[in-house]
Length: 552
Image (cartoon, rainbow, N blue to C red; front, top):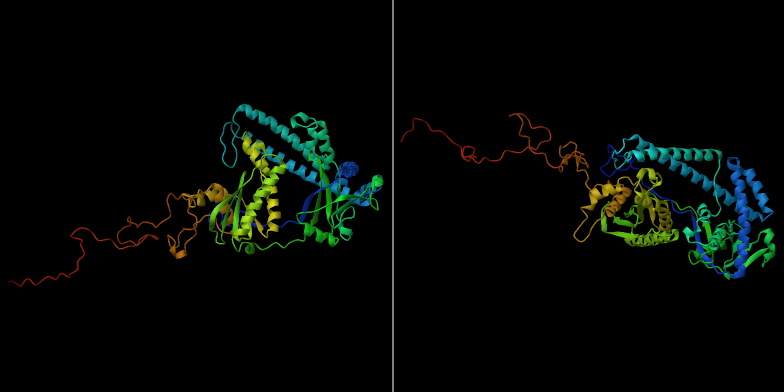
């Protein structure tokens, strides 16, 4: 059962069914980060501990990859016992769990790679089956431009099929290809000039990426973590592995830092959690470019009940259209009518990943502050997914468009929005993105454009998204009462037929009927108007003929 497709209630011929909007569940975990103030001696000890545990994690990952699909709980226990003697039982548990998660992530990445290859193969086969030079449509590309390009793509089809076969073979055998520290950073070693790096700087990044200083929390233990512990007054200490026990400067083989740790964000929530000895996981990592150390604290939250869709939309919503350089938002009341003026929140997706992430956070912060000021409790966004559209086989030489959809942060923006909206008491509603831009521009862009306000296509799409979340059709026109329809019981609905060349209005009177016959069904009945001739002039007096015998 689908919602109105935007062109009236019901199913429209030739259009795909529109999925039902749903409330996105809130975040299930929290992670906060702060800087560590360490001395040179303390930094040296942390690097030595991280390097030792990183080497153990690399060896454990190699063993896990060799096991493949034959891995089970017993082999997991064997790996953990082997690491316990070289570190500790808790470090061994953290390493084996991180290894398992990394192998599972690589497995999901391999599945996504296979889906991408299959999408590219299907697209190349489709274009090869078309005549050379045939033009495409909005839904599917046409044939290749020349015979030379057709031949080159036929060879590429063979290459893609070979890659797909190898990937499927790895998937069935349970083989994954993982590099601790990252494949990109490993390949950068052979292109230091292009990356503008020296060997020393690359070595620093490589060692920092391969360190392992992460410990899972455990409820019931002092301050929620026995391996990496932070007390309420901010003192951090690390349980040293057995080979480095001689570096301990605190009882029970621990190394304590002199500086105090302060969490400026969510500090009260963190303090309340460790006061109750509830599990908190910590990760220490080093930024080699700035030569700084950071600590990240993370914990799970109680599942917040998802509010009903009707309750979230009781005060209306804000429809948000996500674009490459800005968010276009418009407030709608509960009846689907736009309120006020549209708002745009710009960001820049060029540069590094950290810069892009910061730009998205700033834009979402401004959006949420404006939403809270409007008094609404829901934000409607599109449930976008460009995984199948990122292949270059579909868009061909449109490199700029391919780069645009590849860098568009669909999942990252949605995850950020959900987590940040939960802290503001707002609900995120995901809607089907089908036809929102097209129908929004068709029905809302021109009516809302004034001499002092220029409504863009993206603003109109925000209205379409909001109306779809509210359950209203995207089109502004609604069906009249049944007895007020054009044909009394005729075909007039909220959507005019596609072949209607003019506006739907009253049908003219029928003049081509035989005399005495009733008017056709649905025609307008009216009395004939007065004639302009003397013969047919209306008579107001009665004419009486006198007798012929009357004379004089």
